[in-house]
Amino acid sequence: TNPSLLILAGDGIGPEVMTEVRKVIDWFGAKRDLKFDVSEDLVGGCAYDKHGTPLHDDTMAKAQEVDAVLLGAVGGPKYDTLDFSVKPERGLLRLRKEMDLYANLRPAQCFDALADFSSLKKDVVAGLDIMIVRELTSGIYFGEPRGIIEEGNERVGINTQRYTESEIDRVARSAFELAMRRDKKLCSMEKANVMESGVLWREVVTEVAKDYPEVELSHMYADAGAMQLCRWPKQFDVIVTDNLFGDLLSDAAAMLTGSLGMLPSASLGAPMANGRPKALYEPVHGSAPDIAGQGKANPIACVLSFAMALRYSFDQGDEATRLEQAIEKVLADGYRTADLLGEEGKQPVSTSEMGDAIVAALDAS
Ligand code: NAI
Ligand code: MG
Image (cartoon, rainbow, N blue to C red; front, side, top):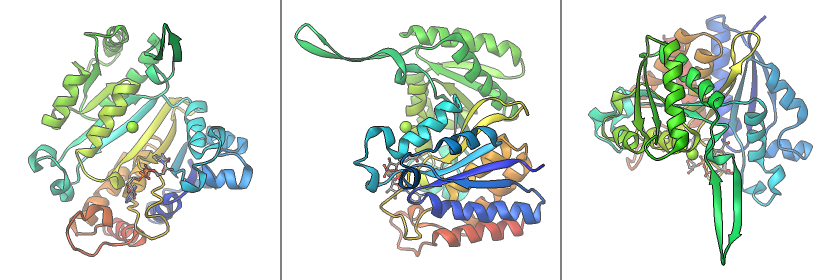
């Protein structure tokens, strides 16, 4: 049987970029005999409109069964006034929580043709290809106690950074597995100098490293890591860090290389019975209501998210590379959606023209 893929296009530009991904998926089926059982369903505002909930139970159940979920984006001004419990984002949060997706993979990759577009010097970013693994289900965003309490005559805001050994162990293993498939170099970032959770983090990662003797492990304080990421990012291959530091470091690293319209992500959980990890792939960007419905969205972030699915869920690393090279070629040939043009007065291509160009480049590969 074919591997299964659930597509949740969502709101705003989500369905627009997903239409282009479908062209790519169809190409792999027709030309590389790589066929998927694709099903589609609703998430976010469009699910609320139809079912009164941003994620229907049936959709949740489907997501638990498939080999991978590919999501577009959720949200929009139409839903801003909804009650918190049914906001579009809740659909996405429910998926992440119930699938227990604890390892968030955020690549920072620089396509040569866009090296000039970065705010950093060209030689600092040209050829950059690093991966940040952020712990996604624990840490300070979830730890108890939390809240705002009265203390004496003032209020106190409280959050708790809390990590169990097993939470650190499993995300460390995801990072080591990733490092084994890449350059076998892993840097773990925490603040063991001032945080108990950081001390434990470093101990557990060091322990897990014994199972991966081929991987060269280093440790760095996260503040120094932030500095090194901007100074010379190519010193890194895979970085593993906690939820809070990963949130900041991955956003910073992403911007080393240019536009939100270029950034894919993957969120992985525990291995399923077939050995594949539970997986959700999605572009980093949101539903971009300011450009929705105008054919302006850059579909590359979503196409690259599918490339990650090829590599990490479907064991098709070579085909993922083929797709990434097709995108590199399209960019080298000068195709630019509006977000990639900056101040230059050039004419941008539309969402569908970009998708067609990628398929044409695949044809020529
Ligand atoms: P956003 O990522 O949707 O847009 C930020 C800016 O980047 C906008 O100017 C937009 O036009 C541009 N942009 C984003 N993706 C683009 C693409 N593929 N091509 C070209 N330009 C692109 O973030 P914003 O504006 O803060 O949020 C808009 C809505 O999206 C909100 O409802 C928010 O809650 C939701 N959102 C959803 C996310 C998700 O589904 N994972 C993540 C972030 C925001
Ligand atoms: Mg963030």
